Length: 361
Length: 151
Image (spheres, chains in turn blue, red):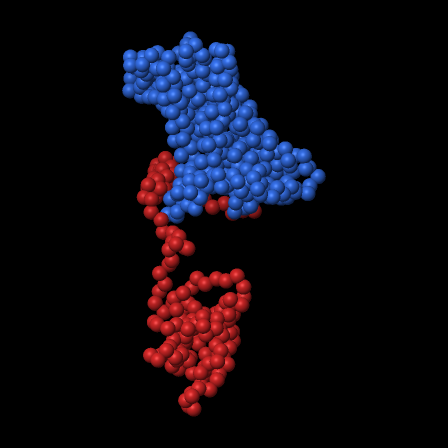
């Protein structure tokens, strides 16, 4: 019996996570449109349901029933597979994100992650890098010039920004001395210098800024959204896609945003931990009123809520920035990466490595 | 070859990219302001200005008869020639009246010259601007559609 329940829990937690991720993906598009509307003193979607709250569902139905136009090129297989590559790569990378405190409830282990990978950081970096293959192949196989140009830009941009992104990840791995995202989150409990929460953003503020900039570029967001620049490239690599293929590209883009937000929260904003309060002290505080098993369950749910709120806050910044900034010119984009972000993160990496060697010598 | 323009010297304030934060603050204020300038059209309509030139109407006098005397002034002055009048005689030997009076709104440019030309104030323009139809014929106005019994 216990085995069965354990098995159900192993299956159920990732499914709940998947449901949460897809809900965020769907409602992020709604929130994005609504927030943009408010910032531009407009109304935004308001026809489907009260305040347009059912708009994502209407969009999904529309995508399902739209005609699936397949362009007449030689690379039809690539054209069909490209959205799948992007979609799979993004959502597989999401699987490595831990999203809460693992705990045992009545003898059943509840792991608050989809897969517990000890080198989760590398896994995420590897799979989010694969997504660019889908963009390039999709742009190439579309057989028209705008998707191709968008794909070329995307390849150049993502490969360039992968460098500072990976360097800052290396900095954080050095700082926490582990590749395990769960441990990285757990190491951010407690305080720094007695008054700051011991979060990555206070340990490595420079790396935080570089990481945010690179993460924006990785997710092709404004101000780095040159691969899908509407005014120049129609809509970049997904110009020729329609129906569910477009929806997959769209969802993968938002999935990438969620992935980047999750990484920012895990590396720099204390993961699922509240500032100043350790998870163990929350458990013991609850244990004073309710049985220990239930205390652990309530704490885990609370901390999952904290993680959710933090990710949503970072996503809010993404959307907020999108409706605030104009986009860069392409040479500016490249010079920001290679002349600012890469040197800064390299110097930061060397300094961090030096300080750590000096501290642990 | 491109002419390189020297960039203006940037002060400390620009080096810190305060403008970025100013921009973010501005959009945040707008977001939290919750105002909108949208007129949600089918439910609420824009208030038209005085002398707005909308759909035409034919006025009537105190006895309920059309003021129109079928003088053809409007039809003659109409630039796209969209007014078509057939006149008939009345009991009064001095006057005519329209047997049919048609305005093709698909041709009409809403210039208002017909109203200016009308010698007896029979043709006016209303503030009605949202009229649609499923066929061209429905948008050719006749006396029944144009007649306006009270102002």
